[in-house]
Amino acid sequence: MCKTFWLARVVVPAFNCVLGIDPGLKGCCCILQNDGVIDFFDHEDCNIVEVIKDVYFKYKPDFCLVEEQQTRPFQSARATKTTFVNYGRIIGCLETLGIAFQIVSPNKWQKIIPGLVSSKEGVKHKRQIAEYIGRLYPQADMYTERGRLIDGRSDALTIAHYGMKHV
Image (cartoon, rainbow, N blue to C red):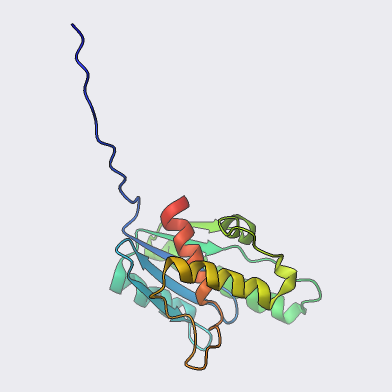
């Protein structure tokens, strides 16, 4: 006689806390916890290494996703140098702190957004990302009091969401 066993499938999030980093000049770090708690750390006027260090000691993220940096057409040599020096500092800081991380291209994490227009459309592209992630996380504080999108926040949250749900 054959016995049948029924197993309940329980979906457990792979990570309790993910750090998403948009390393741009006006970028942002975003902590996303599996209970929906979100915290942003804008690093436009700050030392990115200090920001990551503070985030690490406060939240102890399980995993980090960093958006891959690329040169832009007609970008000056000075701007390119600044971009890649900061990018290297981010990677070095993550390695020093022992935070597991993955570098993800913008094309890869943006694929989770249905019907996203090309990045060549600038403001419309950014707005679509913010609207998509805003529907998933309505508690996210991505706008100023006047309603202007705070640069880097929607990207950093979407990168963290990608890490939480798709990695």
